[in-house]
Length: 356
Image 1: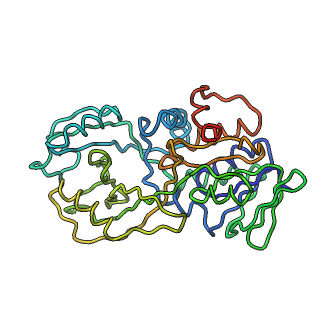
Image 2 (image 1 turned 90 degrees about the vertical axis):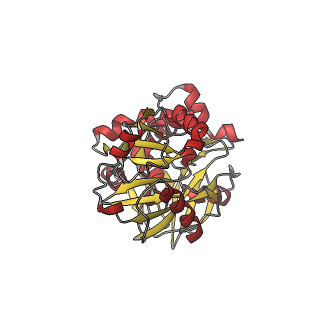
């Protein structure tokens, strides 16, 4: 028998399991045959410390050193661009993200295909960095295994029963037993809670779509920043010599293996095309992922008030990769009874109690 069962093999579950394995025997159960299959494997993979709610920003700041020291980060930069009629939204964005206004010439030097006739305002922040998501996932999985933990893939949970102070989790053709259960099921977090007899927290998955297009005009895009329309109505990001373009959609949906809808992609690509001189002539591929949010858009980390051996590790939203080092450390501190380096206000903003 293991000490802790973790349901979910995305970045939330793997990072939590790795940290918990420092002081306990841990088993991860993942429904898919591959780790990080859903949201974690479809992330835009950028850390911007000023992104998200205050509690998310605190986790971002607490995660940077781990990501930097581990070799998971590389320079990218972030740029906001706007048309003349979007000035109010642009000014709100630069205040929120802490970006610095730059000239039209500077913006076009960063991204040569910008449409000067449309571009009125631009702002830049150089501290935004790419995250090597695959390396991060694999290193957390490696740490777990080195500490004696186990990862079970291809086993979808179909029943959860609590008997004799232990959780009995049926997944596929096997049953795993442990005194403590961590719910890191991403878009399925509320469903897992209900299976366990725990009231859901109204964690809702939202679809985010992405298209990969050829490098515009044959440019070398490797040094381009990630660039956004105001209010994050769309964004584009270099990716292995190509360009990812997203309509930044956030449509609430039921948990499922997500795919991009053609109309949604077309709307986002049209907004992107309006700001560049090179039209999109073909898509190389497209996909979608599910970003799951609690009602207040902060993560949910900690013990269920009505069932202390049921641990929430959910609602990462679009912040899972960039917050994983600090979020997993906090979760392990809670479960293993250690003090946390995070301040009391941040911890209170993340606890499940706030949603009860």
